[in-house]
Image (tube, rainbow, N blue to C red; front, side, top):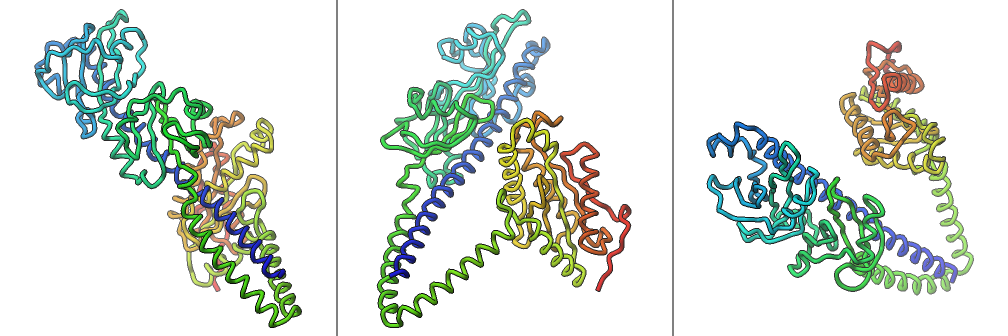
Length: 491
C-alpha cells in the first residue's frame, strides 16, 4: 500500500509539474512571438516614417516646386514608399486637396479634408507621427492603416499633410507567417484601443474599440507583461502576454484560453492516469506475493538513490541562479584542461563580472541584485549552444563559462553574445555611467595562452577581465599570446 500511495503521489506531482510546464511553455512561446512581431512591425513603420520625413524635408526645398514632375517623384519618394505592403504616399495642401502621389505623376483631384488624420494635424501644431484607426482607402478600396505627418510653413502655420498607408493584409500575413494560429489569438491594437488586426482573422472585429475593457486598460501598467483577465472579444478568461510596439501608440497581445493551454496536458494526464492505475494494481499483487520485507527494502533503496541524486545536485548547483557552483567549476575545468592538453585540443574560458554591481545593490537593494544575477545567468544560458559548455557562478557577481574544443574566435562570439544579451535587457542602473546593467568579460584560450595548470588558465582569464574593466567596462578583452608568461606543458 505504501508503494501504491507513493506511486500515486509521484504521479500527481509529475502531473502538476507537467501542468506548470505547459503554462510556462505557453508563456515563453507567447513572449517570443510578441517580441518578434512587435520588432518587425516597429521596424517597418519606422522605415516608412523615414520616407515620410524625407518627403517633409524635400518639400521645404524651393527648387522642388519648379522641378519636372518625374524628377520630383524621384527626389521625394524612395523605394521604401513603394514596397509591397505599403500603399500610396500622398501629399495634401492646407485645403485637403491631393497634390502629389507616389503612384502617379498626375494624381486624381481628390479632397481628404474630412479625414480624421487631416483634422488631427490641423488641430495639432506638433510634428509627431500620427497613426489613424483602420479605414478603407478611397484610392484602392482596401483596408489600410494611415501614418501621417504635418506640413508647416516657415512661420509654423498649417501647410498640409503627408501620409502613407499600410495595408492591413501586411499584418495578417505577418501573423500567419509565424504560425500565430497555433499560439492563441494575436491582436494588434491601435490608438484608442481599436483593433487593427486579429488572428484568427475575424472581419467583424476589425475597427472595433476595446478601450473600455479592464484587460485593455492593464496594457498601460507596463511596456510589456503577462496577466490573466477577461477576454476583450468573446467570453471567458484569457492568459494575456502583451508588449508596446516600439515608441508607437500600438499594443500587441497574444491571448490564450486555459483550455488551449492544457489541452495536450489533459490527454497525457488521462493516459498517465490509466498507466498509473494499472501499475498500482500490479504493485499490490506483487507486494502480496513477494512479501512486506522485500517491498520495504526496495522502497528504502529507491529512497536512498533519490536522496543521493538530490544531494549531488545540491552540492554542485548554485541555489540562486541554477548554474553550476564553484565546486563543479573547479572539477569541470580540471577535467577539460587535462583533456585539452592530452589531445591537443583548444579550450576557452570566459570570466565575466557585473559592472558597478556594488552600486547596484546599494541603490536598488539585494533582492533586485539577486534578480539581476538571475537575469545574467539566463543570458549566459541563452548564449551557449553546445551541451559540453559549462556555465558557472563562481562567487558574488562573478560568472565563468568553460568552452571545450572552442578556439578564441568562437569563444569571442559567445562572449559578445552574452554581453549584448545582458545589455539588451536595458535594466536601469543609475549607479553606472552606462545607465543600464552591463557585464565585462575576459577570455583566455589554450594553446593561445601558455597555462601550465588550470589555476594559471583562470589567472589569464582574470587578467583579461581586469583589462576590460580598466578600459571602460561593458566589453570583451582577450588574453593574447604575447601577453602571457607561461608555456603549455603537453603530456
